[in-house]
Each structure stands twice: as C-alpha cells, then as structure tokens.
Length: 380
Image (cartoon, rainbow, N blue to C red):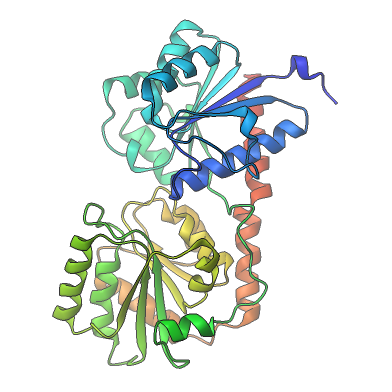
C-alpha cells in the first residue's frame, strides 16, 4: 500500500450532484463514486465541494469529505480557492466554475487544473473568464467526441489538451434480468399487447425544444396506416406551456389518442418504463452525450438517436442503434419502420444489447478510464 502522506491530493468542485436529478447530476455522482473507489486503492486522496448541494448520498461519496454550500456562491468560490492551496489536482465539474480555476491556477501555477465539459455550455462562444480557464487548464475532459470537436473548432482549444471521457451507467442502476413489459404500466397507460410502443424519457420544457419529440409525432402521422397499433409514450416532467403546445400539435396531426404524456416518473419505475418500449427514440439536437440512450439499451431496448450531437457517442457511431437526421421527419419515420418491421426482438437480443453497453459504458470501464486519465495528469 502506498504511503498516503505522499499520495497526490485531488479536489473535485461541482455545481450539484445530489440536490437535483438531471444528466449532469448523474455524471457527478458517478465521478464522485469512481474517485472514492480509486482513493480506496491508496493511490490518491480526495475531497469535494458543491455549490448547490448541502449533503451527499454516502453510497457515492462520504459526507465528511464533501462540503456543500447550498447556493452560497461567494462562500463556495472563496472556499474552493483556499482549499486548492492544499491539493495537487483541481478538477472543475463545469465551466461555470471558471473563476475558481483561474484564480487558483494564477496563484499556484504548478497545480494541475482539469476541466470537465459536457455539451452545450462549450458549444457556443465562451465568456472572457471561461476563455481564461480553457487556456489555463492542463487537461479538458469531454464526454463525447462531438463536444471535443466543439472545444477545438469553437473555443480554439489545442486538441492535445483534450481527452475523451464518456458517461457511464450508474453503479446503482438496477440492471434488469428479464426484458418483458410491465403489465401494471400497460394497464396504467391503456396499452394493449398488440401495441407497438415508441418511448422517450426527457424533460418537456418550453425553453428546451430540442429533444425531437415533435418530429417523432410528425413521423407517426405517416406510419399509422401501416401500424395502426402504434403508440408513443413520452415520460418526464412538463410545464404547462409545453403541454399545451404538444396537445395542439397532436390535435393538428390527429394523434391525440396515440400519444401519452406520463408526467414525472419515479426512480423505481424507470426500468419498467424503458421496457415498455419496442423502440426508444429521441432524435435530439442538443445532447452532450445522452445517458438515457445507454440506460434504454442496458434495459435491452433498441434505440434511435440524432446524428448531430453527442448521441453519436452513446450509440458508438451507430454500432448500438440507429442514428438519424433529427430534422428529417422522413429519415426518422424510415428508421422507426425498419425496426418495427424487423424480426421480433427477443430476450437474447436484449441480453446481448445489455452486455454490449456494459462492455463500453459500464461503471468499471468508467472507473478505469478515470484512473488512467488522472494518472496521466498527475505524472505530466
């Protein structure tokens, strides 16, 4: 066992991991879990702070090593800078924490500074302080090849400073052993055994209309004649404005009885909802990676995603599912038709899909990738 007194010290600063439930929070929880497991091997010492959290889930990271600031931005920034003095590596979980990294690297230039980038936050022109962070960072992790290209093309980052660091399946995600549809959920949503079900899990927001469910609805219009039993289940929270807009769209296309909006889905029903699907579909234009895709596939489901964002990485460039032009309704309809008209999807197919996803995006793979990347940062 290495001498812990001589182990490099890593500080992870994040926006939130436990107080919200989005994709960024999923990533941060898994990062904390992996960091803690690597620390248990005796190769580093870690601490972490969060701007928005106040507490942790100790399955992922110990409370005594995690300091939450409950939205107190000034205290978080001052603490982050002060704690940086005693650490060898500072990892920022989001570019919006730029001020901490810039100040710390300016005061202590020999500290190693790592930035994790997720998606749209670095696809557009950076602010002045963010540009300074991008210039000062020793390494920039990108969760998808698409985001890594944007760092180079939009932000002018030297490609040699970037590293690909994909998302992962949460280690506590309940991997299903069987792949049938839940009778209870089918009854809840009025679905029949003969129905062909398309499924999307996302937040439906009037401010974020890039998930692609509009074009799935439009594609259904041309498929109903061939598949009169086709249904589309859209799960996730929605705001009143977006619900009204979707209802009007369904009325316009004559699909009011074909599309079901479930609203919020509890964590303990996520797997069963994925398994309602004959096809999981979300032709988005704004995914940094798209954790929902690998979750759907690890539940044994076939997937259709957009080809213009980080979804390409989640589907391994089309090896694990179909990639479509998210703005081309005909392309979306053709891909749905191809899946629905194919040979029935068996439990063996579903099991193989699950195995393929775990081989590429399982937590142990993620942890090993993080160990390798941190070792490279520390030793360079």
